[in-house]
Length: 317
Image (cartoon, rainbow, N blue to C red; front, side, top):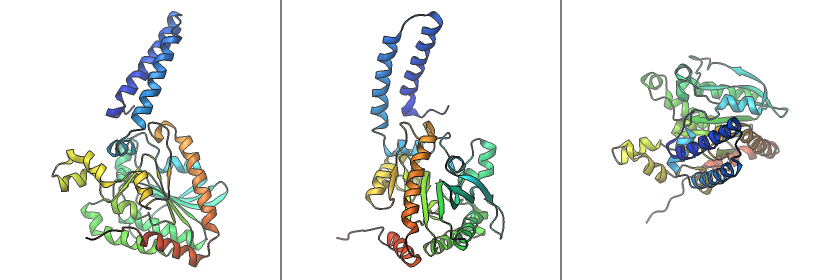
C-alpha cells in the first residue's frame, strides 16, 4: 500500500485499532471502549487532515498509484467496451485509448489517457504521456463519433504530452493544435473529466469539451508544480509553493469558469472508493449529456466556442 507522508499518522492509528481488535478476539478480552475512543480520534484526525488539504497534497493524491485510471472508469461506468486502435498514419499509442461503449444504454465513444500499475505496464503506456499518434487516434475516433452522431466521453489523466525527440519529429505540437481546432468544430456533444493529472497541452489536446468536470483531488494546470518551481525558483523543491500559486485545484478552477463541476471523492481520494466516485460521475455525465443532446448543432458549436473564448480575463493598470 502506498502511503503519502501526510497520511502516516492516520495509517498508524488505523493499524493500532486493527491490532486491538485482533488482540480482543484472540485473547477474548473486551476492549470495545478503548477501540471506540480510538475510532473517534481517527474520525477527527481524518476530518482535520482531509478537509484541509493543501494544493500540493491534492497533487500527490492525484498521482496516487492506486487511483482509478481511465480503463477502471470505463469498466465501472460502461458496458460492451470495444477498443479501437491506431491513428492510420503511424502507430497505435497505448497511452491514449478509446473505443465504443454503452453508458446506461446510451451509445458513446469513450477515450482517455491510461497509466500503468507497474513498471512494465507504465513503459507500455508511457506513464500516460501520449505521442502525436495518440492525439491523432483520439481525433480519428471523434470523427467516427461525429459520423454516427454519438456523444464523446473523455477521461483526462496525464502529466503532459510526451516531450521526446521522436514525438517532436512526428509533429507533437501540430497534432495537439489540430485537435484544438477540430474539437471546436465537432458537431456532437463532448464531455471531459479530469480524473487525475491534467497536465498542460497534453490534457488540453483532448480537453476542448462542451462540459469539463474535475474530480475533487485531481488537478488541471498549464504546467506541473515541479516544472513551474524549476522555472521560477530554479528548484523543484519549491513545488508546494508553485502548486498553491498555480490555482490548479477544483475549487479555484470552478471559480474561474475553467471547469463546470467538481465531483466529490471519499476522504483520502478516489482509490478509497472507486465505485462511489464512478456512480457520482455517472450521474453528472448522464445529466449533462441529456442537456447537450437537445441543442441544435449550430448552437452547440457556438456555446462551445464562447465557453473557451471567455477564458483568461485579465486587467491592465
